[in-house]
Length: 244
Image (tube, rainbow, N blue to C red; front, side, top):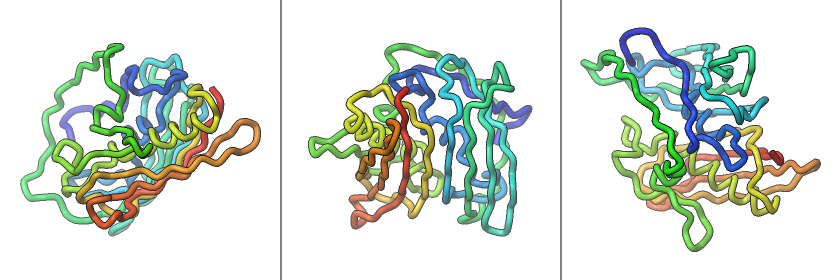
């Protein structure tokens, strides 16, 4: 969407890491949604499925780079995959992602590329966690929630953006995984997310169920509901965590 040379790197901050210092899966999802590589200038893309496998938690990296490969673009469906590497040592592979997207419309007339405005990323120990930045909270009933839909967390088609969804799903999954493991020193090793329907109203509630496996592995199945729209299930995710 920008004029000039594309910058596919992301500078790390404290709020992009889990308590053990590893990469958050949600950050990888936001940086590489992999909905087929369709530009907002070509169509209104909407992710359907996203998955991620972590090879290296990247606890010491300063930046990572997203290298995306478009696999197929059809009339409505599109597929892509990405390799996430240490931007300062590209031979160091951190994670693999892949996904499927669908075109749900045409962009408005007059939409053009924008002038690139470099962002200065300022790290600080005072940064709030990502779930808090998106307005999330853990209710007294133990459920992680996002508030009612607002312009700040909506996509251009007036639905809940995938960024807050990635964040609140992983936050809820990590919370119950830590409860099952008895420690917060866990690292997300894989995720599989399916976008079932548009989040239209809110609040949005996560139901999360931990499943303890062998050798310290803990899986979590999570489901995001739109409470203001008949409690409709809108996004499903499954996660695997290992001791850091």
